[in-house]
Image (tube, rainbow, N blue to C red; front, top):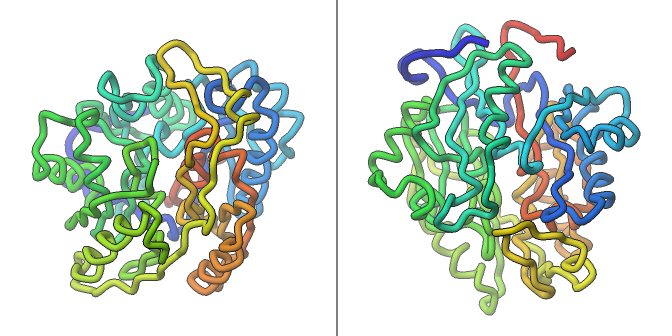
Length: 372
């Protein structure tokens, strides 16, 4: 693995849009008892369904702890490359490398500082050493050059790129005291531009209500393509999400992207009925020292925006809610050339995230890699 020096933007690199071609996708097999229950069996079935759907059109690399290796090999088809690699949890979006491309078709990773979504201020667990090392280990294993950005706390779920110079982020997350409290908003924006090749950053006020990541943007708003976004939405004035959605919409409606385009905004409803943790689900989660104990009845941050775009498909979450069908219709109209693959995602969201959170795309480059 080659460690790259300098600033990615100055070297001609940019973060592509997720809708651009992929070489593959990183996932991490669920093992952590505090997130997935004592045997993680239900979560593993959901992860396997997501992985197989993605594998229809791109290579999936499933990383796993040693104790998860037998179940991963048993439950996943031969299309999935299973690779032993240590991690603290299964959030590949946040702990894997963020990949960039340049005009020559080179692909490089960025290794951010990871502190479990808030460090000593409001992080979700006390030790994250293995997660912090994952991006470098992956790039070393598969030969991707890597930029070191460990001076800056960032998770992959907190950024969304249109691949054409514009980024989406939320103030609730990137300005939270547990990330980069010594930096001003302008300084944070400068880091995003330097390391992701962006020209403009659009700051949405908030994300999804009760999102324990301090409201990652990938749960509330996503680019379908440059100039076009999907925004989590509710018409229920009694729902705390209502005011959050209204403020986000007002920002987007008044903004333009880097190229001066007004946004076409698709309102993607959140589940009509809040998704709440059951007593049985809460009792199966084995919190480690320092972790918050989950409480039956707590509202989980369910959102249809948390989908994954594979080369050939849209892998979208479903919750057994009356808005499941509406979400499928809207996403189908936005991505008519991709196959819709609905996945019942309750057993993923129990862990604190969703389909986009457990995946990290690797963009296609001029060198086609063989993942062996």
